[in-house]
Length: 302
Image 1 (cartoon, one colour):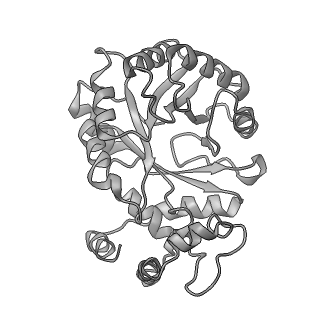
Image 2 (cartoon, rainbow, N blue to C red):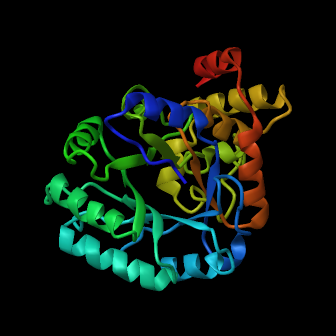
């Protein structure tokens, strides 16, 4: 579990960040597609692969089925879809999730999208009540900008629950947050959870120059998307990154995860999986520690 952060104790935040464990959170698309991963975080961590809404029964049901039999498991929950962050909705959504998950608490409950129609103080107030009641241990957000993070950070009263994580899109090919939100997370002591670490599949190694995209892939079924992404310039970058990884006895997928985990605020990487072997490969990728020279060379390539 991501440790509770005290926004009034910078030294404690830095110490907690130094102790954090790197991990891969594999999101499952079907109950049978994943063996529950026990040690990426201190306890088992499972994240629903679908956007979670109050009416998203299937995602919660799958989580509950996979979570059965593990007394100390953690459910990392992406929740509260955009425009549904009012206090009343948050309370109903959490109660519905607890019921479907078959548990009495959620360890990490994240605001899936910002809700411009609801003051952040209202959302945080409701989430703090849930933390105080023991129904939620930690709270986070997703798809937040620097300004949104700063507003949320300054909103809670002393001692009230505040965001301990932000889940945004980032990969070695999509680095908008690297010089923005990621640095702000480090300044505030908030954990960063990147999603789409494989850049819509581009970093899986499945795509080859001059060959049609494999059937069943994210890009394969979308001609417009394929034309947009699978350019000669993109293949130049992918081939250079692949060669870099191969020279060090690693795969392109290994590089994708290792690069993200080399950033200090990154506490875990959220990766999709449809097969058990993909979960194993995702977890193993976190074992590669990139050197400063490695990072400099990746910077030059990417």
